[in-house]
Image (cartoon, rainbow, N blue to C red; front, side, top):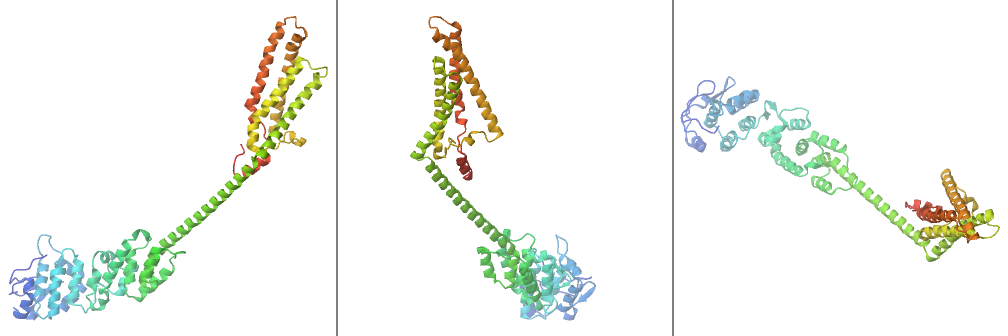
Length: 482
């Protein structure tokens, strides 16, 4: 609604009564007031609202307070494509007022040009601006409800709603309310509140989701004892960081720790700062634990390296090889003595010599297979050469394994003995006679002689290494002894 009524226009009915013998226009208002004489007696300037005629600013203000909805419909709600009679009647009535001071005249111009004609403002806010100009000394009213600082506090706390909080956030209501003398203190609150909201928008992800920043920031901007008491109590219930948090400490220092704004900062950001401080401390604890673990691992690695280096000194390797020779040679000697006790007492003929040769060969092969492992173990290789009790198996599994090896060795030696009797003995005792059977019997004798070293070669590395103490040490270091 931006137009003015035509010159001399008058309205009948419920809107406006009396002539208007002057050119309406914003630039002519002051000229009319100072230079033009009124067209009619002021007592006849009437504006009808809610069935009653009003001639003074105070009367119209009282009527608006009584029936807010009616005033909004009549003055600011009309056809979208044309100006309503109510709007034109209000504009004409306002410009016909001539008992105004220079300040009121300037305020009227600002009211009409910058408030009532602003299409971006809602009807309720326009009506609030109109009421503030008509009766700035009266009660501040919005949507028919009395508005006080304490009432704004209750709105922020959700206790009551004389006005939707969304309107406070969307429109400059506080600025309009500050035009009433009883709410002059709100003149700076709107700017303070806007500034604090902008600051918090930059750190919005940090505050709690269940806390409304706008409510608390407005509460901290209002100068009210109840608001200060509530903020202080709520801030005391909010967790605080157990360690310094730079951004939080800086913001709290700028706001003032014991000010209402500082309390709002604690309510909004205290829990987030406390969580960040706890997470930071947790990371530091984890880093310390990690460093301790690294140091422990490094220490174990050094101890392991020292232990392994001590095992494989040249002297310890030489002694380990000698122990291996003694251990394997001992078992080869026991086997040869057993043969000799069974059938070698009457002399050493070719068959007996062949078996002894094979025993020696198998012993050397077994030793050769074990030598690389013995050299790696060094001082850890401790076969029980003098501890006869350890020769026996210590578990059911070891017993089964030892029994199988004895059976295999017994079968091999028995077969070698039998073949030697059949093949070698007749051949050497009767060199002038050709023994086809003895010659054929020599073939499996040779095959068995080759199979035994092959078996030792394939399985020798799996034989017991007699390094129990070494294995316990390696387990302590978390390493495998193999």
